[in-house]
Length: 125
Image (tube, rainbow, N blue to C red):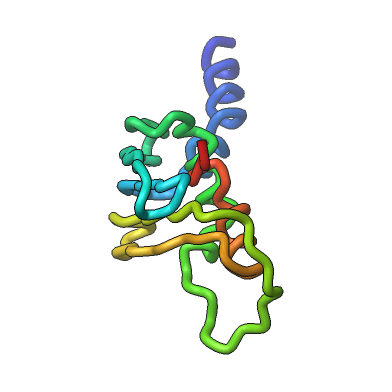
C-alpha cells in the first residue's frame, strides 16, 4: 500500500519538476532607464527555482513558457510604434545549455511583447 502511495505521489509531482528549464542567469533591471538606479538578481531554475530574484518560481515558469522571448526581435520586423516607459533590462548567463545575453526595453510593440512575456522575470518596480 505504501509503495502504491509513493508511486502515485511521484506521478503527481514529476511533471512539476520536469517543467523547470535549466537556467543560471543574472538579471539587471533599470526601471527608470540606464541613467537611473538598477537592481541585479540571480536566478537558477533547475532542479528547484532559487536565487536572489524576488519571485524565482514565477520567473522560471515564465522562461519555461516563453523561451523565444529571450531572442532578439528580427531586423525589419513590423512593430507598432509605441513607447511604454524608459525601463531597460539585461539578462545574461546560461539557458538550456546556451549562452544568453539579451537586452530588453519597452520602445515598440515587439519589445514590449518580449518584456511582457517574461514579466515575472523582469519586474519593473
